[in-house]
Image (cartoon, rainbow, N blue to C red; front, side):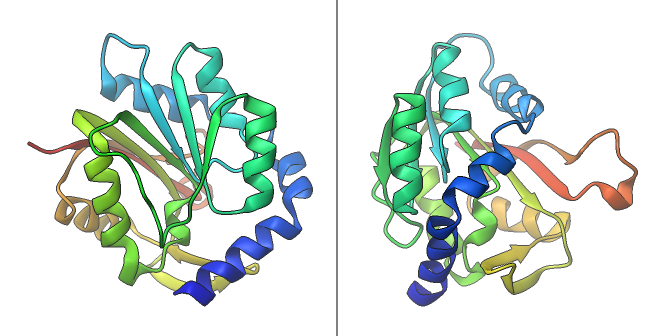
Length: 202
C-alpha cells in the first residue's frame, strides 16, 4: 500500500501547478452547503479538509468564519495550501493519519477518499470517526463506477457504486444524512460524482 500511495502522491507533486489551474475555479458550493446543512444551526465550526490539495476549500471555509485545518499527503500541496489559505495544514497521508480525538465538528473529503486502497479504507474511516465530535458530520465525494480498483491516469483509485459505498460507511459506524450525484443538472450517464453526507453514530 505504501508503494501505491507514494506513486499517487508523486503524481500530484509533479503536476501541482497544473492541477491548481485546472481545479481552482470548480464550483463546489453545493458540497459545502450539504456539509453545513448536516451540522445544523450554530458555528463557526472546526473543520478538517481531508486531502485539501492546493487549498481552495480551506480558504473558502476560513472566509466564512470557520476554523479550517487541512490534511494533505503531497508535500507540494501542503506548501501551496498553507500559503494560499492562511490555514494550518498538516502533512499526513492516508497510511499515517494522526488526528486528535473528538476535535472536529465536520470533515470535508472532496475527491480524496477514492485514492485509499479498499483494504485500508476501514482504518481511514475509523480515524475520521474518532476525530469527529458527537453529532459531527462527514462529507465525501467520489467518482462513480462499478467498484473498479487500480491505477487510473497515474493515480491509484477506487470507483464505488452507491450500494457498496453505503455499506462501507455503515459498517464504519456512520449514519447516512443524504446522498446525490453531480453535476445535478446533467443526465444520469454524465453524473460522474457520488456525493454523500454522514453523521457520526451514537
